[in-house]
Amino acid sequence: MTHNEEIAALRSDYRKSELLEKDVDPNPIHQFRIWFDNAMNAEIAEPNAMCLSTVHGNQPDSRIVLLKAIKDDGFVFFTNYHSSKGLQIEANPNVAINIVWLELERQVRISGTAYKISEEESDRYFYSRPFESQVGAIVSTQSERLNSREELEEAMKSALEKYQNEKPVRPKHWGGYIVQPNEMEFWQGRTSRLHDRLQYRLINGVWDIIRLFP
Amino acid sequence: MTHNEEIAALRSDYRKSELLEKDVDPNPIHQFRIWFDNAMNAEIAEPNAMCLSTVHGNQPDSRIVLLKAIKDDGFVFFTNYHSSKGLQIEANPNVAINIVWLELERQVRISGTAYKISEEESDRYFYSRPFESQVGAIVSTQSERLNSREELEEAMKSALEKYQNEKPVRPKHWGGYIVQPNEMEFWQGRTSRLHDRLQYRLINGVWDIIRLFP
Image (cartoon, rainbow over all chains, first blue to last red; front, side):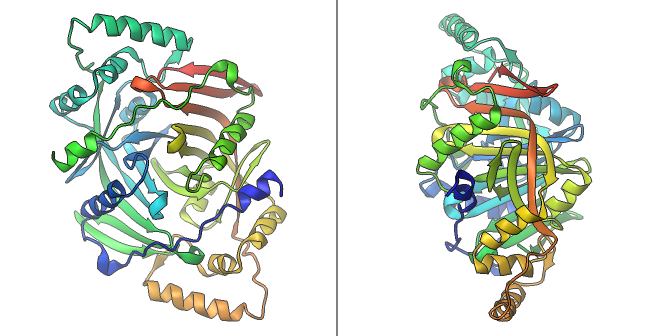
């Protein structure tokens, strides 16, 4: 078997669960909470890791961010507002989120709009982080070119010394976004690729649910 | 602790590995093969699951697809060309791929252009799939509205009967894409959020490597 034949043969037959209309919550954020709790209770590495996609120009871009709160109106993550994703969101706040729990044969797809959260909320989260992460966020000009690993470690070392005597302060350009969804799909893998896909769409302020062909 | 405090507190301190300039292959596809093999050899669910992002209009969209081959010029996956992703790619072939191996504290980000692969290659993969998956691909008008689970199962049942006596034929609208990269980032989680990020950019046909601030 060649290497690519080996890759081509990687497939799972999904049999763990099913997703039926009668079982889902009419509100997709409530339904998300149910699935997220299932993932938290399963033995899954980083159940809150999600792929955030943005657009710059005509080109999509994506990276992992960590979900840090589920609110009644959306999903919160934190970043450097001057990072690539921050700049892309400022230019075009339309984003997509994909969160997948492979062990549960589940994925959730979210389309929505990203808004900055309040300074108070960003403060609250920033100061809840470990000291080293606070200093790391201050030191790193995220997404910019870095000459070497040593340069970063040197900067971190100096900053750690400085902040021995001084409380780190959240940089104004570091904070949270909330993604308010207008479409969410819940995908449950099924056998023979006949997966369950239920899609919620916000129409005139009301969530409508349809099933999609897999 | 509230539910959101519990989510906010979900964090890992990444300590498994490091990614230094001296250790990477000058060609990002070769480097990808190394990391992919590491993932294949680790106990990871679906190491070939990757998040594919497309753009429709001004809005990103993303979903999981399975990597099915690593070629010298890019990354191959299969789909229904009439699915949402297929239509989006026809309108705008710029795509992004994010593949993450959380257990290895690694992610790879790819920006590139998607092209249809040859009919012969699509045939070869289609006929290598299990019989039920071949029939499932024929039955499913992917991404279109489906009235009920029963309708899909009914259609599948009829098709399985039909193809007892007749070899399934790959639908012309089902096949592969290759994503040819113009930018690839290898991300290795490090402690205190001082992650290693090496970005390859294709400049006049030559791959240049730079380090980015985490």
